[in-house]
Image (cartoon, rainbow, N blue to C red; front, side):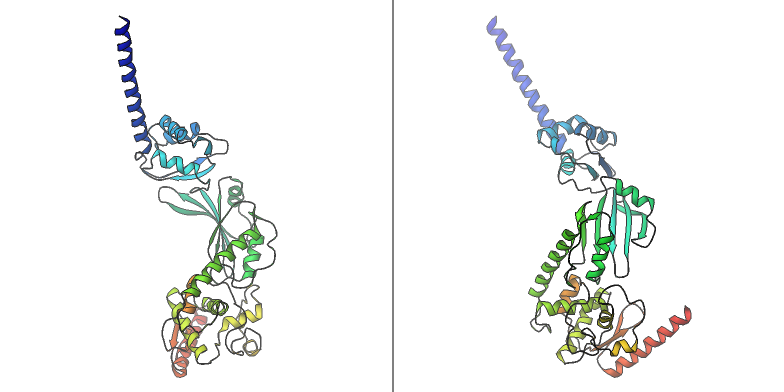
Length: 385
């Protein structure tokens, strides 16, 4: 009898083990399988939260089929203790495994609200934006000029949210003075920025920051990125490039950046300056004259005077030969590349054409006709205003 009982118990144990094994395999398949979510959601994880609370939120929003399997999967993968606070975008069909990875990885919010500081040539615009998970597009909820407009309540409230993301967007063509002054005005940053970086050595780009980030650290990252771009552009230079050093490339790129905001024109504008340098012609470009007046500290805000066009400064390319001694702004990568890989043209002149672009010319007579057309457009614009 005892032998029979032992045999039956062994059979039951084996069956239970098989059942448990099957249950584990089923649970694992559920954990890694595509989830039931049809529309993206923004999952908010508060500080001090836990996997049990998160699993209930996910289950309530239809993102996971079983909160229990979600918790067990997180525990089995040893990620329960790695839960991060923040707002996380959960895409349609996300598996439990993918969601766990998202909320335990870096802690950087991927949805919710962000504050963007856009450092431009004429102003620093501050945007408070909220991501709509359904469309995966940001909607502006506040927009003001930093240091000029009254700070809206939406900004103040968003600054108090722990999961708010912050980004600094640097436009092409800003000067180092403009960047430093903008960083000083951003209350999300801390510390003294230190010595102003040399002109041209800050990379126009987007930078993620967090509250308390040191201003000097942000500037250091901007310089590091720009140096990488300078090195890459110089390595890709054409054999017949007019500039002979990376420093000259940076100077020419800054002039190209200030002369045109039309991406398709950069290579042509670069060809004009390249041709003029190769022929020993003065560059005669207004942005260099303006820099000689302002030293990059703010905008001129008016047209150039004839006396300023004639006045000798180190940057006045109507007076000096060749390139000025320093860059006149911080150029983007496209302008760096254009400076050492210009298009092949015979153009040596250009003037605004009234559409935001320029009219290019090979001869002075052709250029004078283009200038006359531009003067007519200017006169018409003044009448309309």
